Image (tube, rainbow, N blue to C red; front, side):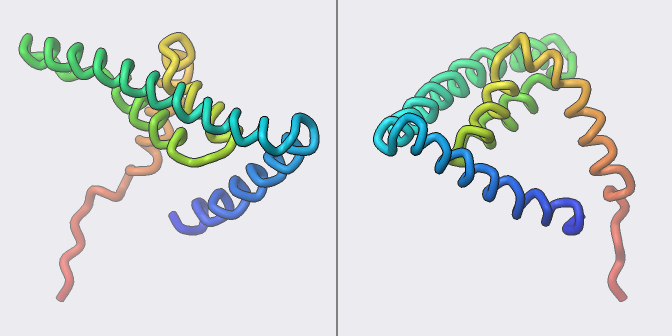
Length: 127
């Protein structure tokens, strides 16, 4: 798992810094800073709105005896990506938060999670 995650932990921040430097040269440092702040506020508002509505939907589904939908994972991942400063992670976060794009991304996310956790649910006994 670390071998798969390590390149992302190195590449994503480097790409984010390159995008921020390019953006600051293109539109100015202050405009770039304000744009990052604006996307953070918009993302927080959208995450709260989507999270609240999906939480209410999940409560209704559970009260009827159904398992809540996997859309909650999309909002969770979207909010997680929006926590990191930068334009690339904001775009990914918004893709997970917007309902019409979340429906497109949801099958890929569920497939990735199944592969990621496959075989990890076995308990290891230390002797």
